[in-house]
Structure formats: structure tokens, C-alpha cells
Length: 80
Image (cartoon, rainbow, N blue to C red; front, side, top):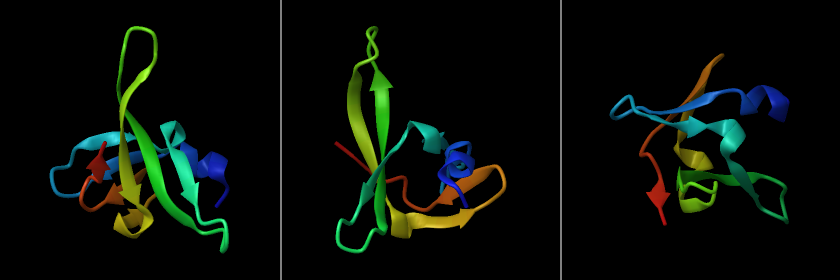
């Protein structure tokens, strides 16, 4: 799957059915030795000037299913 196809998908927390965000808004954390994706970093909230107020990290291992329109995530990630 190309990243452009992946970026169009919505992230959904399986526990509450809550929309977490869009993959296209996320930054990827990639292991430099293996090239594997470690996690997704999603911006949380924004101020009037578009500045991020925080970040939510979703470990790649918490992704349960990648469907045609959405990505199902277990445990909505940790915020910081």
C-alpha cells in the first residue's frame, strides 16, 4: 500500500468507537536500522495560529486492522 492511500484513512479507537484523527495528519516514527514504522504521532488540539498543543503516540503494534476507509486502533495511544 502506498502512503498516499494510507494517509486518506481515519484512525478509530476500537474501545470507544472514537475518531482519533486522520493518518494524513500524523508523523511517522521509523526505526533507522530496519526501516520499519514504530509509531504514528498525531497532533492533539490546535491553537488559533495552528500551533500543536500536544501529541498522541500510537504504537504500530496497537493497529489491529487496516480497512478500506479506516484504521482500527486498540488503546488510543499515549498523549504528551
